[in-house]
Image 1 (tube, one colour):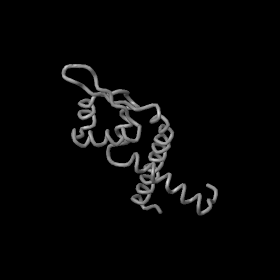
Image 2 (tube, rainbow, N blue to C red):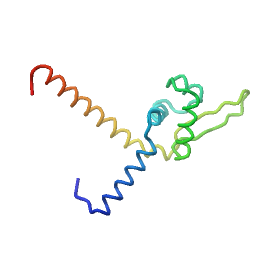
Image 3 (cartoon, one colour):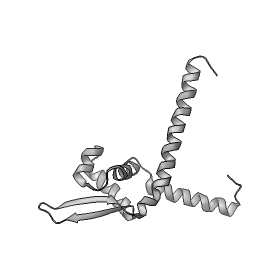
Image 4 (cartoon, rainbow, N blue to C red):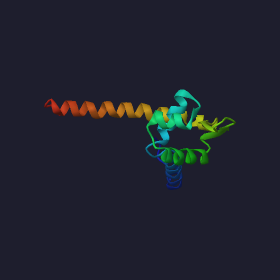
Length: 123
């Protein structure tokens, strides 16, 4: 990575902070991955699939909706059902999530590799 000026560094820091605030937390990325993997879901399906409390799920979905990453559709059924899905804008996050996945896999291998080496009397 090239050296950044102080102004560029502050700007990059703000951008990274904004990204982290948007997708951080225990459930947001898991919710987004669930939608990427399987598409539209009903509220109750998400509760069961992720084993998350309805109260926490509702809060997380509201925040994702506020950031325009998730859309909410009220279905005209009896009883009323609500479905959620990612927005077209959310799809711009796919490369970021993919990079996080790749780095996480690499990091896990690095840590486990070092752990296994030191347990066997190496390093």
